[in-house]
Length: 363
Image (cartoon, rainbow, N blue to C red; front, side):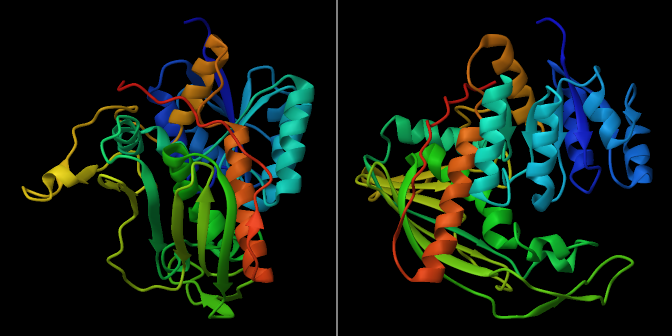
């Protein structure tokens, strides 16, 4: 296999421990450095993992013991950190979204191309057995030709549990840019890229209140839409109805369903790596109805950071990583177009496209 890909984390916030734990057990990668503007957070994370050192951000960028910068900063800093890492000759893997805007996202991809480096981006949940088993069923034609889909993510908001939730309600945040990448990446994986969108959005509340942690009771402003709906036209012709909301207290909506000429496919929560995949076909309509499919594809026991290991394997083989920058850029473009459609009231053509990543064999 050769030497592992050495990873340095920038941003030791809430999600970083999940990444560090996953990287510690995966082959082909090794966490070596951690940096954060709050040095105590970096030190606390590094102390729990053997061989990992806490350093400053600038020292991490210059460190020869780092091959890839794992960018876990807040969305508004994604582009700045990614561009600094690429300028330092590092590969980059970022948390979603790729950047706050497509202009910034394109700058990242252009810089990577000029530097001869690779960009990867979350979500990597799409590489788990849930979405990959659903894809295998679609590829096998089990529900015929896909004609439509639905995708719903509803919650009353992250301020109920997150101790520092303001960034979810600033530009680069909101339910669409926060949770939309999970759903849109899964939809592109299942149904192909998106060529046109329409939609509407609203901001029912001007402020939110932190509900947990030492800052509980703090009121802060909302600067982005918190309820977004839309319709996506995929290049293959299927139409997806999508709703992303921080304004729904409870719902019984499916996460993702795909409707085909011969049946329906129920896809598990794309914010998780696994989950039940069920199919209802025209042949089963007179029988037992829904059938749960066994795991057929995807990385078993995956976790946040599996996409980094997939990227490391791709660098060794010369294949493109599955959670790659072009896919993340297309997802960002679709989300930006949904915002534009909501602002203008018109359908918007998505200018970008991407290759659907290779399927993941059951592994």
